[in-house]
Image (cartoon, rainbow, N blue to C red):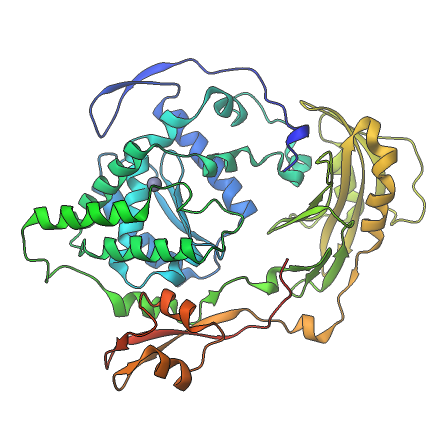
Length: 478
Ligand SMILES: [Zn+2]
């Protein structure tokens, strides 16, 4: 987000030769398995902090139960595999080096069977077993990921502005076409070994294709933009299934089990976790509002809400702190960080635990204003910073944002709810249109068809479980 402030440390790890677990070929790799795991674990932490896990133990367990057996029978069973769902409405899944695999809530709400989920997870496992991300990492990225290189900036300050989120860069890796094909091939095999109906892989590509056509990419890189054409993959899957030359009827699809797991899951954006109305940030759960400067680019993350100046050379935002410190203690801790010192200038008109500061970083000297406040039984940090010479320029904007923090009292905003999935078991056959008029959804027919893996004119068989979307309060789009 604030690229202009971000420079790379220059230390590089040494190259080493490792045997590729899938192909058996020796390949030049910059990193050992141990480092691969360390990078992945650090990046996984970044993902958890910046995107946040879905608070739904049942869904988390379900996804792990599907992914883990495939991983344990893969070429790299000894890795510390994990399968988790992040609370993000975009349709996406991604693998990090050494074992962490993530699926989004948006992916889950768009799939329609356990076998489809297995197809996506199997593909992501393939990226890890074939060491795609590791061989893709550039030297610069490796350096930025901080392999024993040291943090770019101390963690407490770095949390804001995405400075510490180097691990998230991993999400933007593009694998080559050959790597994707290899992962499809591996995923296909892992699925089949667990007795899943591999034909369901075709449905996944069909759904992804339609999601792509419907647009709506979010802040995460979409599975589509980083993957080859779903049409080609569909063709490939069909050919591969035909080659099997066996009866697939007994293989596991597990549609009802999968759909039952989705009952009540939030669909689309969840406004309770905070949303923007123009440059005004509203957080119904934590009952506060905060106004960002006009024209700044904003981002809502679980631990911080941030704005970046149009020139990308200043950041202002609010973060939550763990640990139950008072504002004064939190301020002390802030200045206990190496390279961070208070500036002498007095601060008027802001809460007592407010100071100007200067931070010595890899990016040069940053200067800013920070304020610690108590709110809803916790301590929050307001922070604004920029390159040292720009502080006087941005100081009024920082102040205006800080003083805009207040209690959210609008009852309509406090009561806002996400839309949710509800599963209906049909007693009789009907068309999707008939279903929509009998069990109205708060989404259009085309979208309803998409999330059910159907076409608008299709007829639904009796006994089938069908998704509908209920509730949700419209919030103005960003
Ligand atoms: Zn892939």
